[in-house]
Length: 180
Image (cartoon, rainbow, N blue to C red):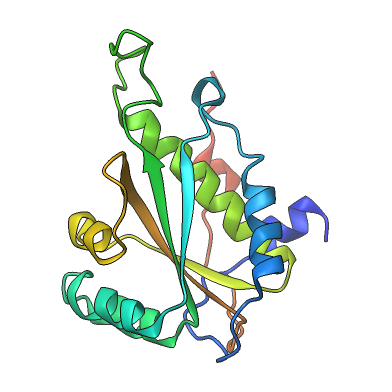
């Protein structure tokens, strides 16, 4: 699939087949996502693949702020990716000061780029994903025993799609662009 087709046809998938995505496929997706650009090539994004149903259920039950839509999506997914990022590296200078007025927000920017690249690579390999943003990052970190040097950036439910989604209406180019 070419890049534009991949971008234009990727959808947020919330219903999955029971079959788990194989580790070779996951590794190939992560290998592609590792090519994402990052602040001064810091490469802070990490991918914690949750396959254990007990942990999936714990995250659904206690970590998504009782948001029923995310609870259902996580329970339907054979796997959940907890995207984490190394703390205090991206956007910082060696002396610990910030490089720009964006401060530590570069961490989330880089994790977002990597998450989108992960989802596009997954789509190219026939794997469905949806990025979930409503969660308590401290509870998720505790549920997966995340190292103190990392923090949670996003959750990505993942599996083989059991639904087909149409693209929602998009804004026109004229609404989105401004030339000066």
